[in-house]
Length: 475
Image (cartoon, rainbow, N blue to C red):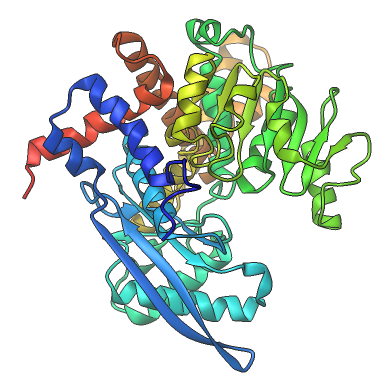
């Protein structure tokens, strides 16, 4: 296991723990309780053989359970050739804090498999995924009640459907089998709005930030999202949906997009949807018309802008490039894009950072909705939609009767329309991100020892987790 990025850098898990330590110090938490919160409770490593194209390959994977102060423990499964034990442990810890911040009653977990999905066919990936799922199920780290995976880098709805079906065949007596994973296709127990949830949650938290004048002023900004110059790193699931919403709904200006093979710059703004289509068709960002191509994409992180959104991998801003970052606000859409050493530098500049443990919690929030939906065995809105439509019709009839005027069609349609599942999911996500932001902002403003949003977010999380330990006891 690789513990260090290099001889002088902290590992991912060490970086997360250092950031948590700042919050623990700010609230003076008992050292014993603090250690209990920080410790990863369970780590399972599996190695299993699969026959691929007339040869046997050995695959290595992990499932870390950081905390079970709430059940089930929740966290994605990522497929990547760079997955390692330390990364999985760090991401499991982030899930614990993330769930606490947004009041999702889950513990934290994470899984990973060392694999390059692009090198295998669909059928081969299905065989590998089902075998990996069996290994996790056998070891008790995959079930609706105790440990519920979700998609992450390199996985998606397809892999979650395979895992759910594998669990169903191993436990045919469990009527809640569909809740053993989230992020499934809608036709197989998934929920509308899950695919876009993390990106949409990023935008909701940005909108809430711009509803707080004092926070805007402290970041050296003014006004709203409209017209802000944004540099976006990563057009994967999170970055793509974040960029599309900012581009189309908030009228923000995406002046640069960074991908693994370079970056595009256009001061007049880049159309995120068209850039994504170009990458899909050409397998590269290079050559996109009406934009300047920069081969060293990571250097574009240092471009002057109003808002920087790292939505790709961890450790993108390190002590090597932190001094060169020239933005006013960083939105951590990815997990751990800023190392602890870089965070220390950025706090002194100062640059306002909305932390990953809050910003990208949209995914686990909607996963929670999906899990609840699977346990209840009914889609949201099924029982009340027509009742709400009828009540809306009665309201329109009463208004028209009293005013002796016909309501415009657009008002009639809006009042009569009952909320469907997607409406309810988006409403619940928006409310979750708003309330969490307000709690973080209040913690930052009320404690003189807390100078930044990251420490405030961890203080919110640690207070909630510590309360569960102190109320119930540690055995």
